[in-house]
Length: 101
Image (cartoon, rainbow, N blue to C red; front, side):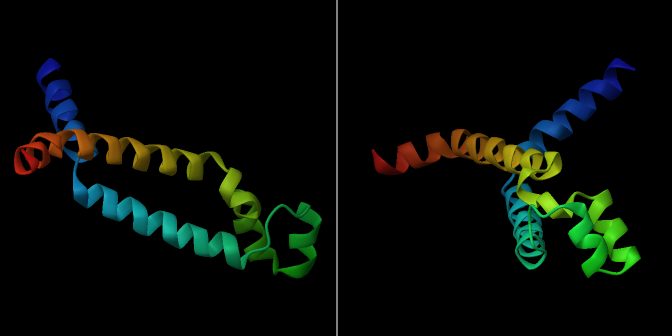
C-alpha cells in the first residue's frame, strides 16, 4: 500500500513540474475563458433560463458557466497553473543560472 502511495506521489510530482501540464492547463483555461466571454457573466439565473434552451440552461447552471471567472474550478485551474509555473521555474533555475554565469 505504501509503495503505491509513493509511486502516486512521484508521478504527481513529475506531472506538476512538467511543461506539458502547463501547456495543457493554458489551453483549458483559454477554452474556458472563451466560454466565459461568449456567455454573459454575472446575470441572474432567470436571464439564462429565458434566453437559452432548457438543456443549455441546465448546463450553464450545473457548471456555473454564468460565473466562470469566480467558479471554484476556474480558480483551482489558475492555482494549479501558478504552482506549475513556479515548479517549472525552480526546476530549470540551475540550468539557466549555469548558462548565464
